[in-house]
Length: 279
Image (cartoon, rainbow, N blue to C red):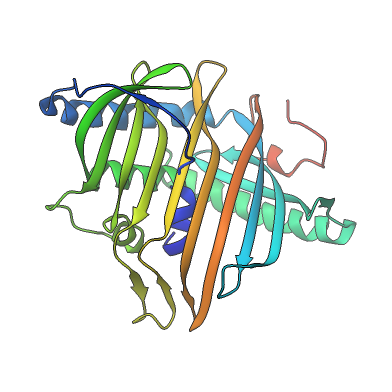
């Protein structure tokens, strides 16, 4: 995962919080970060028993910032082991045609097999989104801690920036090392509840010919507590400018997740017919 997908996965939803004076000693930040890493890993096992609905909206903008195309896609989401599987169920507010649905089923079946093989090789492995969050927690440095509230819950709010000693291992981390912003960590669960950031430097792939992201692109992510046991991303936004194969790219993207349902899933249930749920 690199470039634009990286920003989509880590985007933040802006909403009001109440801040008070700094009270968390800087010496506690390392322990806070380690606790957060441990909690993110614990949540993976519970997350695998959930399914939910994802709706992604994209505004494709022209060079003047006017919307020239509005795209909407709806997905059913579940997990095979640690891997998230998305099944497209509709576009532009309309369900897929029978032919489109058959094609999507074939694609999902291939994804399921890949996920099964991946889980067999690495049962404790992370999915792509979790791997990105783990990268973030490893290579970033938290600063300026303060206490506040987010949706009635006590949180610790910190700014983040790259750790000067951190080195990128892949394109995903290369992007992250050029990001700064603010993070909200739920005090009771030590889980990231909200995240917002911006790209401080441009990112280029293939000298900028293949792909580039411009400085100033920003993103956000807000999570919701479900069944008092698990956090899921609820709203993510991305405002991105860049180029792909020398063509300009300007997009506003919003991803909304809802209808979270807990059930015991096996590795073949994700390809059930529309409207059916695995038992």
